[in-house]
Length: 257
Image (cartoon, rainbow, N blue to C red; front, top):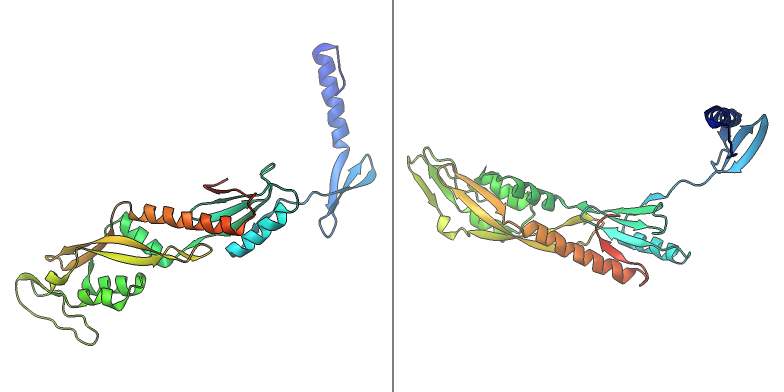
């Protein structure tokens, strides 16, 4: 910018002159491939290279993320990988932190269901509880069998023996549970944390069994700290996998850039 010594009037004139020159430069269009852009500069057509947009790619596997990291590490960039519960992110060059490649980590339906149960106690009738274990959490048949054998007798009886093909109902006016002596106070639910993207190894979550004979309901409640601890463990496994697949020069951090 030119120097001026005439005080405020001269400064205003200088700003006016700069604005006039800027007004004479107008963008026109881009080339069909988006690599060039054209400007009208004082009535003259000027061509310039258009800088590429920042990378915002999405990888579909750890192997793809590792292959891309190898590629950029070989190009004298300084790649860094970050990861948390939802995504792993390759920062192509930590010096400018502009280009990024994400690997979405898709939580499994079983893990999401356990998170719902931890957030809010959900008492449910016997049939629904069996479906929770058998379908929602995909637990083995022997883990479900003990809950099938429970017979509820409350009021006009709200439950029965729910073995496949055998529904037994009674009409005793009493409050009792047959088969409760075989029920565990807690069970260990084995589920995968991730459906895709992250490690597929299952984790074991300790859960309490809450029994309400008067209402004829069960509730499954993960013990406090079980889910965060399991997530931390699976993140350690993810970091170990990444470090084994990436060049030694590429750091791996638990967190987000």
